[in-house]
Length: 152
Image (cartoon, rainbow, N blue to C red; front, side, top):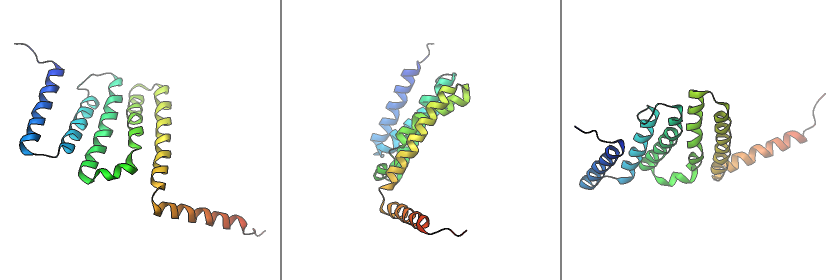
């Protein structure tokens, strides 16, 4: 009896899921986000290898799978604010690989990407009127506080 290769098994599972989607007229966005999530979790739990390097694709696929699953359920209009998750995805995998291997280069790379993600989230959310007003009021209050003479 011959064994089924991993690529053949993945292709077979993909075709089965695609057939179910077509037969039951399911939301394809929901299905492919679950496929991404399942592949990512496969890497995370060591299905596709045992070295610490598996965490990088696992972190990327899991993070993006969760993002797309969220958008499939809630709505893709939120991607205008959530696009920095695409920068955060490799950072997630790199930080997991760092914790598995303790190689400092992985930590530095992950921290740079997390810092970029935080900056991009700030820029993304700053586009909302409410946050612009809150930020503007905080700047004005800070300016007034600097102009008030200090008592000795």
